[in-house]
Image: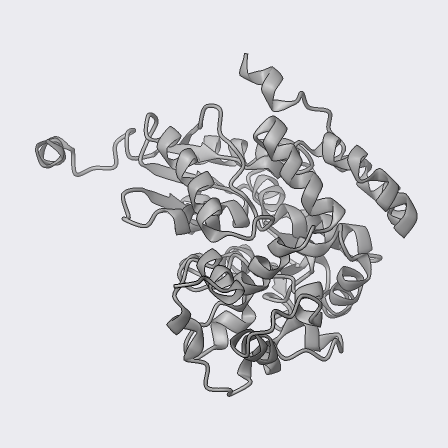
Length: 152
Length: 242
């Protein structure tokens, strides 16, 4: 049988298709969603529905903003794991700079080595105005050797 | 073989039973080094021995889309811990979740430091009180959710603070999300999410998650954000002020 994009997403979440198709449309996930607290106007159920209708919603606002807070999973009667679907969909695209840098750090060092990540994403931090908070971050900046130096 | 071994184990908590393999996680080796140092000190005082897993790797965090990949990364760490102990302590909530999920056949027992904290033992070791000080315990998402990997007693920080006479607030915001996971992707999102948390909290914000600490500290204006371990060390007389 030919594997569709949808099946690939379900496979990545480590669950079967049936675990998601039990959604009854009660929209309780929308009512507890963190993103709706700040008016992002999302409905996680939309995401499920459009996957089942064969369209992968790459730019759905939940895919853009989801913080993996697991509130939807906690309140869902069937415990449908929305955050895991979101992550599987995110994996399909190139991903943002931080995620890519994080992965490359793990590929090089085996761990997330923070100085490396910080300097790689520095242009992004400068552009978005993160460095305004630098005085508050100074106490986080501990020098540590990269993990592969420690290994020897 | 294991059965025979069990027979010879003493019924009293021996040194062997208080020995845990320790998985710090990436943050605790970098930005949250303070948490790592304080945690080791707290356990030293409480008489629990921690041995860091040798050459551990990242648990995969949330950055990987495929659950299978994350499980495999965590299983490598569990395998490495075997040499020390089958009992693990993972301090970062996210690492703890990933390790607990990777422990499919329940071969290992994985705890968060909050789960093995015995309030009575703590009370015996304490030298100070918190009378009159306001606190807002903040757990964040992953210590309380999902249920399968959450800590067993979701009110442990409240119980400790209450027992030593501190006043509590912020019942409504204790399990809210600070957006720490997306902090370096979308700053505005974290800013808006933390606004409610900071507005409704009073006094010291007590957190355990390294990322929550970073985000809340970045945006907080009047609240002081402290690790729970700092509070414990203050109680035990190791720190002079909070």
